[in-house]
Length: 412
Image (cartoon, rainbow, N blue to C red; front, side):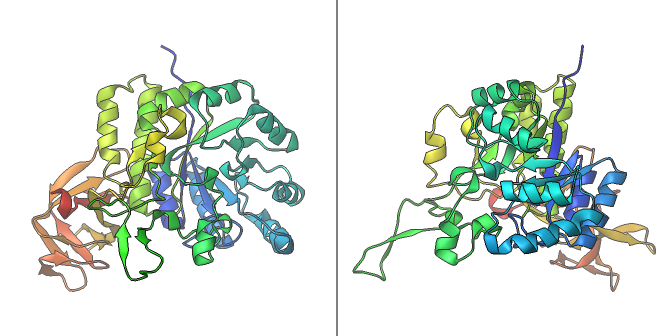
């Protein structure tokens, strides 16, 4: 039986550490941002030296790296943008992600021959727009997240360049992220990479003349989130996305930790491999959804592409964070004296607790914490706290990129 053509798995990273985890867990490509002109400018991101190091690391492992230059650019920023684009000549990313046609002209002029990818921020929703992007020099477009599956197939059928779609991660209440709420409330412009995620805060109703009285709009135990959106998850329908002929599936999350990126990459890598082997069936999908549920997220939705009713996208009052597992540690080197891996603690865990271990290319396993030893003093401790470096007995052999998790108390 002829195997299916499998799209590229495109994964986010906000620093070199996360990029390495993304690569090791099976990403075909990673998208990142520099210190300027991208839509995630508040955390991490890569200096020019970091970009060179990251691209070299990824290329040695057969992984592509795309650089985001997708911020909205104003007239008084053009000279700084031009200088920044010229500085990218030495780092040689595999593609540049843009949303502004003016930025495209500067990239074509100063980085001739480089692949240009059109960001979802450009809101392309039909094949004529895709064709125009191709005529202007784009090699790929990331379509608007507001498209139906029927529209996706129609666009792909009529297009000659690569089509990329988001399949997982946060959604905005505004059209493909063109939002002014953050700037209005905090002065931080979402269209310049400074989004404060104001749509995800808790809100209360205040009567005009009783300024100290606050009333919940519609509240459950997690809070009130009247602007909040669900998180996109197309995993249950991923075989249909593949059948449509997309070139790349994209995971949202350039503000996420190595734990989140590792798990989501692991899940979608396995899903694509199962689709290639024609083994993407209900039992495997259920297993992968259960694993995906271990990452912090909001209630999932299949979004505009597969949801039959808009009600799921519009009624999000009680949609809040779901956190069933906590990231408790990762491998941070090797203790030569005792021949065991050193664990950098991210969140507290205790002796005798059960730990869930995720490792690249392997099935997750559960292990019991038999003993915890503080590496600096080689003394036994009962509780490991954040930033401790410890040796843990009972975990067995660990990969340098293993992720340690435990169930949160509310879910035990």
